[in-house]
Length: 358
Length: 253
Ligand SMILES: Nc1ncnc2c1ncn2[C@@H]1O[C@H](COP(=O)(O)OP(=O)(O)O)[C@@H](O)[C@H]1O
Ligand SMILES: [Mg+2]
Image (cartoon, rainbow over all chains, first blue to last red; front, top):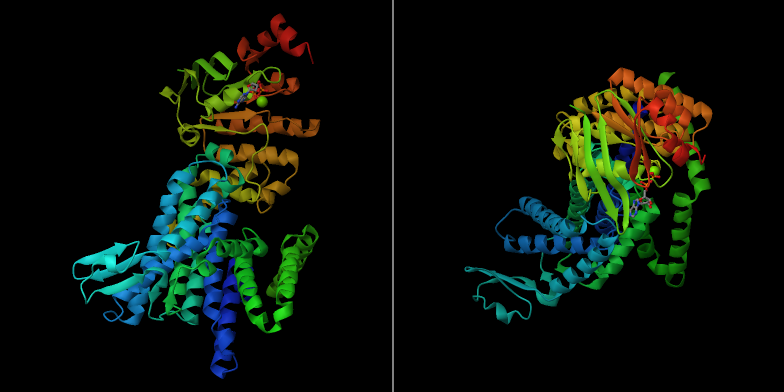
């Protein structure tokens, strides 16, 4: 309630704004380094993936930390976003300008992952209990396997699809192959770049952080904290669970669109879309602090980059990675450390207040 | 017409008739007590009234409207709010947000407005803040608004549950053992709070309580339950001097 409009630091008073500031600072620093030509091609190739893993972690945190439901299938939603948007971009590769095409690809990818999230939510979120984890785990694997054997083509007669072979599509000679079974989608225009990825990360942050501070967000968190009490004050539990889960899936789909428009060959392999990836994203969320959106972004960025950057140190790579996991765990979960952090935060806030009024 | 009219309510869990042939009439503005030994079925009555359980038989009318079989959330919108025997706060949310989330049925803006923080967002949030703070100040908790609700002392947590229930603007307030686990000071404070709600909001209250001092001090009428059945019903004085009641309930204290 204290007014501090004259304080230059007042923008950073809100914890949400600190998150945006960190992301923008990273973007500015990396852009300068990239322009200066001091970034290795290895690292520069990691920047877009870093952003899409941060985005999917933000989306998963909405499901796990804010709604309080466990999902083990977010790689599956990413996969859907990636494939549907890549197929779309294939169709309009030559007929639409890059910017508009990517925007529409985003809309398509997000819409389809949201749709799948919604369809899964209808039966599962009505139940009270940990059914979502098992269903999403199965969903992720099924989606990956279907997309691995899906053939999709387009000719003047419309779409053709098959689960066995290209030949079975019976396409006209001038038809376009969109998805070629295990070979996936090849030649997707590389419409994504680091700046777009940062922009989309900020969009996902705005959506989730604003949601948390809104009517719907409070309803969602009340269900997480106590479903029975939420019902007793008139909250429509199923509706808000559906809303949160669908949005969470949609955000994962957005990350998928970045994924497919950052590489020329998209394949539904376990390495990129298997359950192990879903669990890796969950690790980002848990280590970043369940319910802490900023924590998810930082954990995803650090924990994604670290093993990649340590590739040179072959022997010690996993050792260092494990140590970092343990340290992050202690920083974000040990009660003593949390208290200390709280204290420091209070001091920082108070210090600012003094500066501001003096 | 009674505000709450319960006719021949009955629920069976397996072989157990936890509540049997239960009748109750509460007039607008009354402070009504529901007492009885542990396991008598008092909480089950609340769960039936609020749609947590569906009655096997019987009928519940609120303000003349049949609400039997309605879902819990609907029943709250129909006008019944409650607290819980085991505190059920939104523990990872602030004290203020615990109340704001209960207000939101009366402050509508859509999801998109909420995500963009545009349009009516600022205005409605401000109004919600103001109303929530007003409710909290009635309960003397406005200074704790920013605290995490789980960091409140026990007695305050119970109060916050009442504040949250009141924020839904109910016609009937159900309190399940509000004084449970409180020390005499806290209990006295709670009695003041309950009287305050009555006077300020003209609230009709049905409360379950073990603390006889509290019950005889504030309740005008009582129903005594024993093994799921009504043992006695009527004015507090008459009921408490009923020999059956003394034998079944007060006698074994
Ligand atoms: N969901 C349920 N399933 C089975 N038995 C129940 C259930 N809820 C309550 N009961 C039983 O109903 C009886 C009354 O319980 P309750 O209403 O909690 O009593 P109290 O009067 O102490 O609040 C108890 O014997 C309890 O075990
Ligand atoms: Mg009870």
